[in-house]
Length: 316
Image (cartoon, rainbow, N blue to C red; front, top):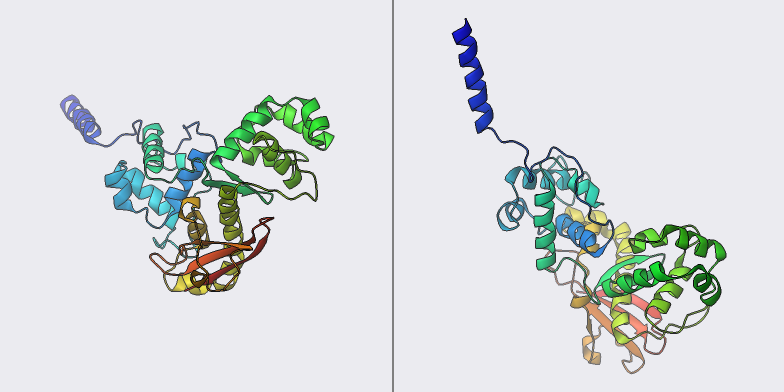
């Protein structure tokens, strides 16, 4: 009897020794990574994981991840029908959600972040980071704004920038602020306050309500990226079901595909399907994002003097 028990024990030990165990790469769904939510790396990571080009094979072989981690990430994103772009999709909305996926640990997170950065998913420089309360921020603008905000005194915010005193109170109480998302969520910090903080951080004149923002030309591209993203929300509300039925990208995937670096200025009137007067109207274009490899081009027309949006339109 004793010999049998010993044999069973040895068999269990050997079996356990050969089995896969959670490692640094393979945890059981515990959040372990301290990456700042809504920062450039986080936004790039989520855009990468939520995009249709990110497949099981890519995560498994190119990133590379443990196959169980790769499989679980794709399963989480695609839902039970295993198809991206359908009703049961569960796109990642936070770093914590990614990190909590079974078998995804610190090393796997590091591999994902490194791959996303190396392959252009992480916004950098004058690439659009996001839009908060109608105010667009490039990665560089966000970095400068946060640096400015975290050094600003209550007096500067309240008196020099003429923010609502309650906004100044909440900003100073929250310092150091870790992201524009956090800043925008503070008490009494809305679009007007964000715009003033952004302009002050960039070293320009502080804008007051009603004033026109005469931003550099590169800001027009980031503004178009923001306006394009907003236009897609309305467009998908009308066409979304038809697009996805035909194998097109979901709204979230389409919006994540928008890149400031892909935006170009229309220089010849013949290239603008709406025939705007290019001496007065700035027309920018972005390749299609609705269908993979599709040719549905998007355009944004702006008044050259004020950069006020005239319209966002498409041409196929």
